[in-house]
Amino acid sequence: MKALKMILYIVIGIVTSLLVFAFFLPDKKVLSNSIIINSYPRPIYGMVNSLKSWEKWSPFSEMDPAMVSEYSGPEFGVGSHQAWKSEKNGNGSMTILESIFEKKVVLNLDLDYGGKDSTLFILERVPEGTKVTWETRITKAGYPMGRLMWVAMGGMMNKTFYQGLEKLKKVVENLPPVCKSGDVMESNEPEKIYLTITDTLTTENIAQFFGAAYGKIGALMKTNQGVKMVGAPAAFYNGDPSNPVWIVTAAIPVNMEPKKLTQGISVLKTPALKMVSVVHYGDYSTSSDSYYKLEDYMKSKKYEVIGNPLEEYITDPMNVKDPMMIETKISFPVK
Image 1 (tube, rainbow, N blue to C red):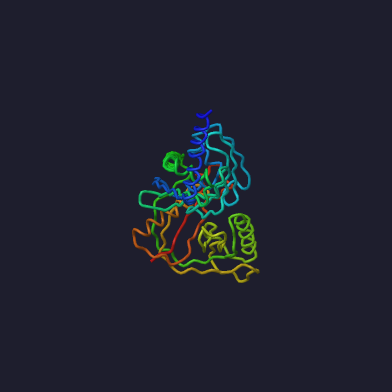
Image 2 (cartoon, rainbow, N blue to C red):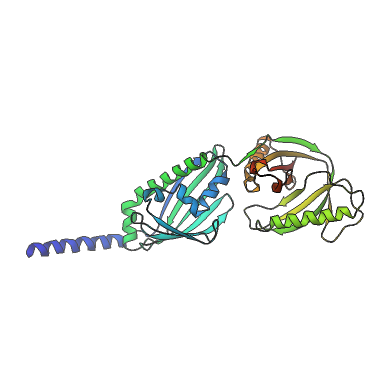
């Protein structure tokens, strides 16, 4: 009996000591790891901005193949939600709170031990490719278990996060190509005349806008004798893709200015310009790779961009079956 009491006192003493120890532990902790992936940001962003895609590289999926996940909300970006149940990893959920195009993804974590954490991915272009930083911020470790867990497992978790980055690197660098870019070209372009329609758009309504705008411009050309299309349908872009909306100008190059214009259609005359261009082969969603290629080239040549980028749609995506056959010429005016 005395032995049992002694054991009980010891247990109570240990528990009390742990509670006191946990009380003085910080409830905040930051784990941060980085890796360089030999890739443009596009496929990396796609992997971290889709919670379903985490199954391809997440260290926690590998640690517990039996983990059960349920997804809700949009497939990509803000509002995308995952809830999971795992005997090895514990239960929890996460939701994407912020998504900046090919630059940053921020998620809220709700873990079963009482933690209210956040994790974020920062993508930064470097000469070797893209530097990816995975940072997890424990802003309210639950008392006492959450605080004690991070003391006991912080180092191991940091190693686990880095293993996840290594798997992400391997997956991305072994993805099959979905696009390619031609050689960068320089040219001196003459003065040009465009019939244009401009609007402020999001990615969700841009395709519908182009269809309506090109149709309206085409109808105007039919009512103006002698006005002919002299190049591929085009578009000028004014804005940062990181923003939810930007200004888009649908443009058709023509041989002469029409005598009559209908409401909403304008004439744009561009002066003779030096242009730096590349032909992008692939779906429009992959075009950022070619923009980065042009950006690197212009930096190496120390060119100054003096206008908005121009996209010329050489092939109609409705008429080709292979996305790699979609050709888009991307150009920047420089000096």
